[in-house]
Every structure is written in C-alpha cells, then in structure tokens.
Image (cartoon, rainbow, N blue to C red; front, side):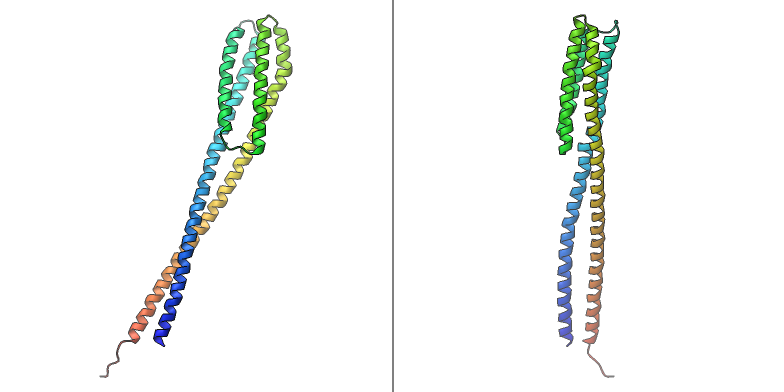
Length: 227
C-alpha cells in the first residue's frame, strides 16, 4: 500500500511539474512578445511621432521666415533684390522638401497621409505664388505683387498652416494611443511576471512536499528492533 501511495504521489507530481513547465514556457513566450511590443511602441513614439512633431516646428519656422521676407521686400525699398530673395527662398524650399521627405518615411495613418499630401500641394502652390510675386516686383510692379501676396498668397499660406495644425493634432492623438498601448502591454508583462513567481513558489512547495514524503517513507521502512 505504501509503495502504491508513493507511485501515485510521484505520478501526480510528474503531471503537476509537466503542467508547470508548460506554463513556464508559455509565459516566457508571452513575456518576450510583450517586451517586443513595448519596444515597438516606444520606437514608434520616437520615430513616427516625436521626430515628425519636431520637424513640423521647423516647417512652420521656414514658412513664416519666407513669408516675412517677401512681405518685407514688398513694403520696403532697402531690402535685397528679387534675385537675392529668390535664392534665399530656394534654400528654404529645399529645407522644407527635405523635412517633408523625412516625414513621408515614417508610419502614416490614412488621415495623416491625406493631410500631408494636402500640405505638400499647398507648399508647392505657395512657392509658385512667391515666384510670381518676385517677378512682378522685378518688373517694377510691387503693387500687383502685394495684391497677390495679401490675396491668394495669404489664403494659400493659411491653408498650409491649417494642414500642419491637422498633422499636429494627429501626432498628439496617435502618440496618446501608443502610450496607452504601452501601458496595457506593461500591465500584461507585470501579470505574467507575477504568474511566473507564483509558479516558482508552487514548484518549491512541491519539492518540499516530495522531500517530506520521502523522509516519512524512509522512516517507516526502518527495521523494528526488540530490546
């Protein structure tokens, strides 16, 4: 009977340990998956949200710098020549194009891609208007250039800024979403870690139980001596 009891206990322990090993393997895979997801979320926050948000600051700066320069040229008689201003605007346009290309390399949601495409169109349209204004100025017709600047030029500029505002709002919303995902994944990782600790405790208790049972059986098997 004792040996039958021992065998039953060992079989139970074997099944329990097998189940625990399976749980450990599964929890390990889940932990790795959660860590990878957290890493991807933080990488996306940096690469796809933080860097583009900084780039948008430079985009706004370049746009306003261009507009102020053209405005100063139209309202003053002591500024640079149209050719010099055109060369400066070309440098700023190249900087804007570079920032937009960098933005396009990031992960874009559908709404974001549409807003960025609209922004590119407005920027290109505004650059054409700048060239038109400078040609009018170079031909001695600053008044006509001012009409374009304050009319269609102003509307196009505001539309470009509006597109940037839309992109900024998208950056904020998507950044918040990624942060929430990271928090959820972190909570799952903590839960799995707690489960692994609990499994380790159970294994320890099982081992102690087996040791205790083996001691009892060993004591029962000792021969009885008469004095």
